[in-house]
Image (cartoon, rainbow, N blue to C red; front, side):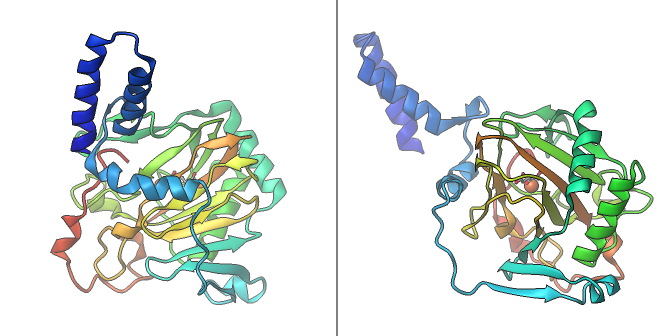
Length: 304
Ligand SMILES: O=C(O)CCC(=O)C(=O)O
Ligand SMILES: [Fe+2]
């Protein structure tokens, strides 16, 4: 990183001596591309993510040999009648793909109720809680409250069946977020967690798990990547990805849960994302066993 900053200085100096040297200009623009994201110097933590993020986006992670799949009959009583097809992609933190969990009629209705109201997505600053548009998250979307439509009700029910967790009741703020990424649309590596200092933490806890429904096949790009786990998931209509963001023993951020949405290269990408909060899971999860002070050793991203 520092070497690149020094190289940039030297090249800029060189450009003052040879003002239209195309080779130098090209090198500068390449270095700037490496160093700057979001229009500001890239943070060290991004540096740590990027090589794997980019590799994952290109679909270059090796398949693991120990994948397993099963029918889930147990997470919810309803599954005795209609079990889900599950492919476990990672045990700890849990990452799993569910097949055929959202139907065409539901997908078209979700798009229909979202298109007229969707707005540019933003991220929240961890210090100021200010919501900002962020070039690292270029999608449009809309949060649908839990009782806003038959389709949202039915998806919420499915979410409980898939995860076995309780959904936020009264405080059902961010129920279902339907997102659309256009060409080049992406969400750079990030965590979905807020951390214990967040104002929402006292009432809601943290974002224990994330469930993403994929509402279309993307012609090219748009993969969901877990850089630290070296897992990538290609969007596939009707599937869902469930992953845990918190370590279940400590209820603190699982540093391996960082993930990203790769740029869409062809077509567009529709997903629906829901977050399961930890405070509502007191009857679904054992209490945290230990508080791991070292967990914060892992740097966090500024915005999420
Ligand atoms: O669109 C995706 O693949 C991931 C979305 C995501 O991580 C998020 O909205 O927090
Ligand atoms: Fe996310």
